Image 1 (cartoon, rainbow, N blue to C red):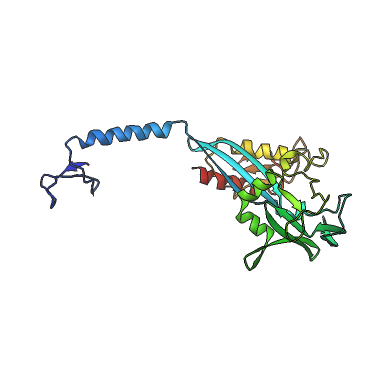
Image 2 (spheres, one colour):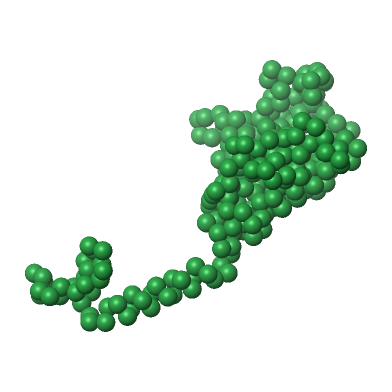
Length: 279
């Protein structure tokens, strides 16, 4: 529908109009150049360009998850998932044999339905930010002061997730005093490692046949090859009866994902967020 005006406009120009839009261009072979640009666009669409992105968020109620997604030709070409722990986990020094008597909070917490005596670091400094620990309503709570405001550690970490993730990766974690000075010879809790991918979490093969790692691999494999902008997990359903392998797996749109963990949707939603950013 491109056409060039037969009469000059107020500026004395005979311009080309396409679909009702005045391009402002005047040269006779306007269409040649547009066709060239369209050809380049078509080539770009079919090139093997890989775009990657990450998304962070709370998963499995109490952990910081990270989804890393690569997108090629509109679908997932690679996916990986990992989790780290919030300050409340690193600061829980109950199980450690070496617990300092200074900068310590003691009390009762509910752990997997049972009340137990706990010891937590009063201050934990991660990536240069000092969190203050307390036991509130039988739960471990860490807060951080920002200006005049005291914020919950989970809220703060989620808002600064990439920074926090990098700090944990660098093992920039210390039990400290209020000023951020390390308490001598006092380690923090690493019973489950720094990241779940280290293999210390859900490593009981009898209790967890797939384990955490196996579940993440199943979810990642399910995601590859899909346009996650069109993935609907509203009908995702976990089997009530175990299959021949003794597993109760999740099915999405009639496809058995092979994953078994309760909060399957948390991880898929995190991957969808990463996919959206990558596109």
